[in-house]
Image (cartoon, rainbow, N blue to C red; front, side, top):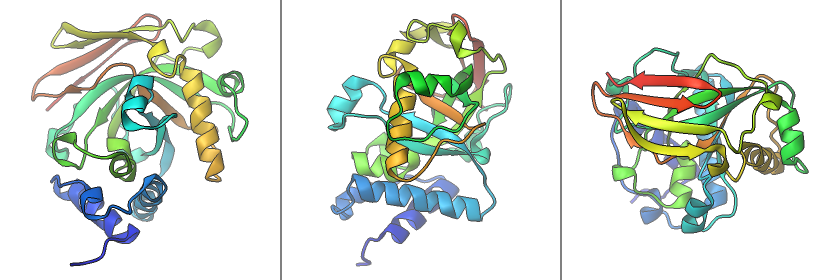
Length: 260
């Protein structure tokens, strides 16, 4: 049997993504895959994509709900990379022929106006670096069968990243109470979930600070102009062909995607 390595895990995950197939947990065959090694795999996947011509445009946070963190045995969100190949323009359909089993979740999105680097970043300093706040929808798509994975598996898989769309309405953060920013998630015109910004670490700026500090410990800064997906406000919903998913925000406007 071939020994598992970081390089083998990268090749396997990229092949699953390219060929639109799922597979079992890597940790089942490689129990040495821990959280730190999962981030090594994640970074190596990114390097392969950059070598293939993609550009880093930001970061995303995963497991920003404290309840989900407790279930997974961690005390801070996961971080993962966003590239230009993941951008879904407003109005563009979710490309089902390019994905495996996509789900959609609503997000509060930050666009940074200043470079942000940890450690030592607080929610206040994080929010001061934000240029604008937007409505967002993230399309996640695990390369694991039935979205079944251990924590190191999902970290290696770039936190199930696939596509994301950012609303065109840009609001300065000073004009918002982000903890109270309400969102209705609708599928086919029917409300299926509600939440406020407090669902993300109590306040989205807290999530941004945690991300900046976690990446800072890895020697990475968040750059001006980058997009930051602060984490799903609700559980993600499956996308059926022809279905439209809409996020209605109190101050950030509405945003929809249709699966085709």
